[in-house]
Image 1 (cartoon, rainbow, N blue to C red):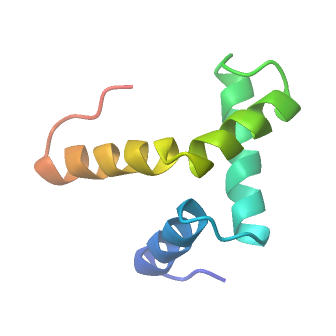
Image 2 (cartoon, rainbow, N blue to C red):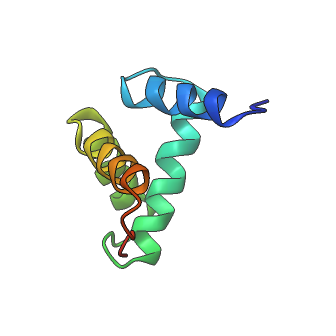
Length: 79
């Protein structure tokens, strides 16, 4: 169980660093579902492949880093 934001950030960092396991599975499946809902992926299989690729090549981490920088700078986050 994750009880704090710091614990959550640590889990996300490990997943983005390539750790496997239940947390990575959940992150990838949630991302896959989001990609399907957004119309970026055709189905969960496609979304899972895209999410896995984005984690593996660093795009997911880079996107998170940009979001963190924007929120810490007080800039509005535009969807």
